[in-house]
Length: 204
Image (cartoon, rainbow, N blue to C red; front, top):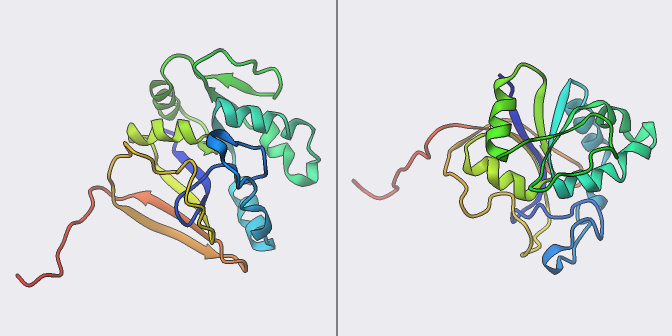
């Protein structure tokens, strides 16, 4: 069995759209592309290096695949390109994408949820979902996520694609690791912990 890891940058109000730069994803008139860039520090680089230092494969939606495939194949090695270029990329798309642009790319055939569940049942390295806001909604609805590695930035945008959209299955989470950057980015790792424990502060 392989674990499915959602690895995402999010704002304090849960927006995950276009953290990397203007024009990355301006769907819906989103005007804040690049909101994560100026918060980066050395510790964040170290945490990212640790996350990609062990074997992993990637699970990507079509839009995120196109964005990453336009950058990583020609990116300098000092930017970390080798680990992403060497990793297997599983791409979910309703159409038949051209996967020649980026080495080691494979289409997920048929229904995305069924295909990802089948990948999880195989032996192999962990499966990391990067970006892919629409695909994340699918894996959330089908309860396929084993771990969340979320970097929460001290930014409130108020609009945009959110990590936990409508239709997300309710669940308690357990914090298993956390760090805070010098710029106030909270880097946490959470795992599903079953049903939400309900209580009351009222007198019995």
